[in-house]
Image (cartoon, rainbow, N blue to C red; front, side, top):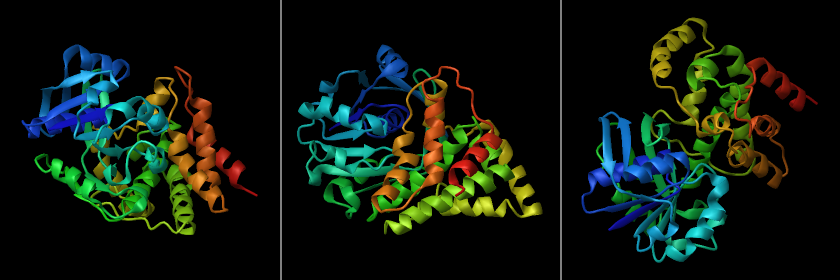
Length: 351
């Protein structure tokens, strides 16, 4: 059985390596790009770091889409804005493969011209993986990965086959499952990313320096959550709970608990050392540091587009998008202080 990953970055390389480790019968192929990809192609292996320690997993790595030919499963793990171009390049080689999107954006329609409905699976992962150096990927935060049908439909046969594919992976805290409302699950993760991407504007440790800072919580974090929830409610999209820690409701509750004087101090002390050693690293922050284009238009921008489609507004997310674009493309961006972000939000959102 052949499994390929298109545009394998942190998520694609980690999941590809874990599958290769768990299933000796699998032929795993990574189609890679950039400096990270160059290192993988040079060594034909991925170094993965996690609860198991550190190990190197050998597998085929190339930069050619034609290497996915003959695959039973093709995972698309590129940034949302690259979906269309990647599918165009890979279309001739998809064959009868089941195609699975594990991406941050809501981009189901981008697949319509390339993959039959019954062979398309939409996924969401609440894990956090990061490229820590060329050729190496680290699991910063474990969690659940869920699969379901496209366009918010119930789990289809294809998604059931994908969930079965991952059954052999045995990593503490890492789970794979089906969900009947994968769209609601994906919007839950999208809202968390919208919150996390706002913390990237100030180059902040998401938990310790953003969520843990009173003024950031009150004037940036909680307003983003309220706006996301309001837009989803008006769009009649039922947000679904994500099992485990990476869930919007749990994160929102944590922010409210931190507002309680003594309890908030205890919580901050309890989580500080853990997230100081292993901070949650968002891909947007890595892109800003490298002077690259980010996928903010597919994350915070998705709430802006959804709001416009239903006749309302999402001014907070719109401002986060604008601020991100101001930082993009600069090799050494001058990140924005919390106070300046709050000032801009107030200026853009106050009538």
